Amino acid sequence: MTEAIPVAAIQLNSAEDPRHNIEAVAYWVERASTAGAKLAVLPENFAYFGAEARRCELAEPLGDADAPIQSALVRLARKHGIALVAGGWPERSADPKRPYNTLTVYDAYGELSGHYRKIHLFDVDLASGTAYRESASTTAGSDVSVVKVAGVNLGLSICYDLRFPELYRRLSELGAEVVCVPAAFTAETGRDHWHLLNRSRAVESQSWVIAAGQWGRHGNNRHTYGHSLIVDPWGTVVAEALDRPGFIVADIDLDWLRAVRERLPALRHRRL
Image 1 (cartoon, rainbow, N blue to C red):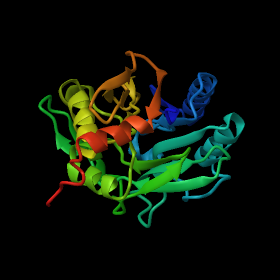
Image 2 (cartoon, rainbow, N blue to C red):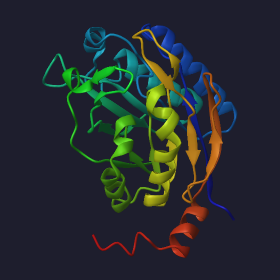
Image 3 (tube, one colour):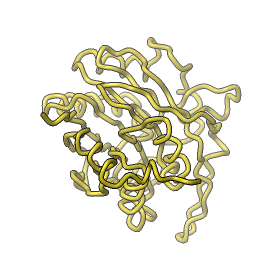
Image 4 (cartoon, one colour):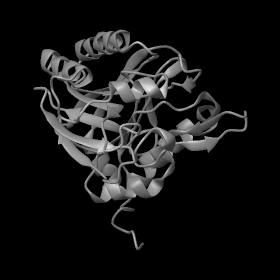
């Protein structure tokens, strides 16, 4: 019998109103759960996508189940009996002006199963002239994280991490079977690199990839690519979101993952 877990990637168009954003999260999580998903991945900046000063104000201490963002996630997981991968949101750090960009994982009972703080920060000057300096307002994390939830080992990453294959090699060494990539990928870079990078990470790590993206234009003058994806360990895109908020669902087939790793044992052949 095939060992398969139905999962969802939720695509949002988050902006500057946290209440409206959380309402959108609740709507799409309910829809994904009704469609049979046992695990749902939310994109980066799902709760707030706006000016950095407000982001600092909204930062919460990790593990505070009464804080607005985290309490909403706990309620949704419990209400729908669904595991949630929620990344990233602003977590308080030692520097009040530079919170972490943190992903949290909740099981179907709303219990915090693990977390990951974004390691690679987006400090880039694009060809269009747009400049991003994530490190000016965000403290980088340092720990690699694999969490078991909904019966699968999840390797955790956020957006710009996607460009650093050494992270995903480490996740595979730690036992990841599925890699989660919550993102707010720019439209400019996404057109050329989003599919390529997600498929590459799937093939290199011989893992499933669930990449949940922001889409459209946002209140902070950002334009994101969307095209949320679910990719199998052979690099095949099995589900892709349209150009609008919504969700995609696919079965994570762990038998297929094991078959790929057995037929092409590249992970066992590593020398470096």
